[in-house]
Length: 433
Ligand code: COA
Image (cartoon, helix red, strand yellow):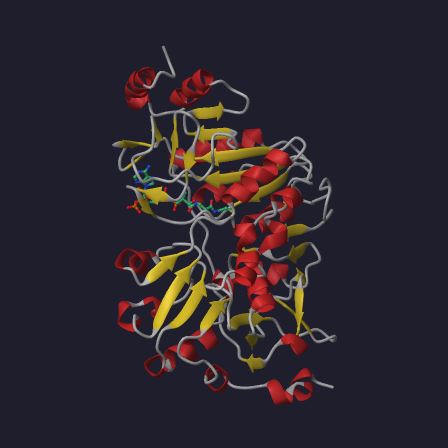
């Protein structure tokens, strides 16, 4: 029997499904590129009838009218990550930021925190297979845990969503099924500048054949990936699988053959890229997506041999602490899975964690290697967890180094214009003599 026939009692339009939302309810949206556009649009159309609905979300991908100040009375927000869309709301107080929790623990938070425990999960899934099981498409991440923990699930079944293996959801588990096609959220490629290319060269040199990689999104990971085309038997165990993975598979550098867990398969919590990339993933046995409490668990990551984590940060102090989420004493982004992956790489036999950054910002006027953070800035990666710090001036390996060795190594990779001042400050701090 056709699934639409079988589940006809649960099939609704988006408008009909969101009629069940009441003032004061808590809704978790599927994470980032998995946010269900049809359900969000329908909810917005009811905005004036609703008061104090709490929306829990990650990075917001779409037009995101729900974040606009004019809806302040209708919707309040708990954001699990601050991106360009949620930052203004955070600054004016309408968005509350969920800081201080590791990404892999968020599903536990949904289960146990009375503030986060959701009434509703708004998710997006692929059309079902013959067993009635739907893929979470490009976002299993905290979308699956949202569905797992919410009292009720409304799912947009989007025929455009790729069918990706890994964790699936049965149509039986869904309360309101909304079949509706929507365009997918896509992410473009990034063009690196000269500094980024130099950093990417240093990082690629640290990646050995047979490594399993975690890389984020942006110009730097894209540039690094371009430098990995001559490597052999790379693997992927990452939070976000990007289009660069497709390129590395196509050129033969990445086959996941040396992985210790999930051999032969790229593992991620979500995937973001172009339509072409989503088509490449669709039904491709080389990809599986799992929830973030599995993918980002440092003990799971650490089971991989030669796990390499590559992330960006905002600044590093001379003791080797990295701030990846605050500027000027204020929250700027979020921790995401950075610390999970740094720790996972540290637990991995032959693993490496790499934090990569330009040595300066704002036209070389601010050094990103600093004596110490200004008041209010956050330590995202502690000096006990950090390993490689890479800038366009080279690589500082901080693992098992004394304070003095660390400060020396970091000053060597700082911009030359700041090295004298950093040395002076290090002496004042009693690190250098
Ligand atoms: N002092 C002052 N301003 C700084 C700064 C510093 N030390 N470092 C960066 N900035 C400014 C930049 O100038 C830029 O400002 P602009 O937009 O006005 O030009 C802005 O901050 C963003 O800097 P940029 O270098 O473009 O950041 P990015 O977009 O590459 O993001 C992080 C870098 C660290 C914020 C981002 O990678 C992040 O949020 N990481 C944490 C989460 C994570 O790692 N997730 C992946 C793990 S799986």
